Length: 261
Image (cartoon, rainbow, N blue to C red):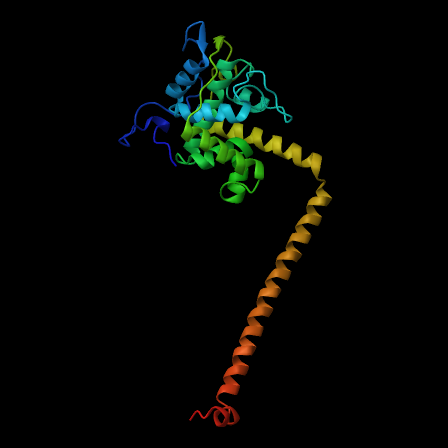
């Protein structure tokens, strides 16, 4: 499934003036003083050209629309933004529903732009990081990520209803991390990916030492070599059996026994 609306591309495929990611913008003054969740999702959809149903599906899967949710890994708010990622997106309060949804939508719009509108890869990157998507050449072989992609896609296709709740729209400080001197979309995307790298690197360092990594690489290499040797042996056995059969088939004894001339 692909999304044509990213980067201002309309249903005809024409390129518009809007951009999927606009660095340096202020999240304030989009909405009145208070807004319902549905209004916020609608505004985020228009601002970043991401389907509203996709944003709501992510919010449902991430936190079930709970603005105060915090994961064990430290992800925050409705769209479950990691603190470093939130800062790079210009979100100063990840527990503020408006800022969080706008920031999360901005991030998924970056992923959609990165993967040419491929929703599956964008969702995999949202959950596991774009570096893991690049590493495995697609959806990473993580059960959590695979289940996440299926769940969000199902929510998006079936449609989900946001709770009937309204929140104050206070985004005056939302763009402080993107103040004057912003260096553009590529730098922003690179900064977000760097934050992802650091996060996953820290997690891995807590779980595995460098010596563990070397042992794993050595074991993996030996397993690959053993598998290759096994395949070669099987090929040789098949080849030997075929040659033996051919030798027997055309031997004088075989011809006499079978009556072949």
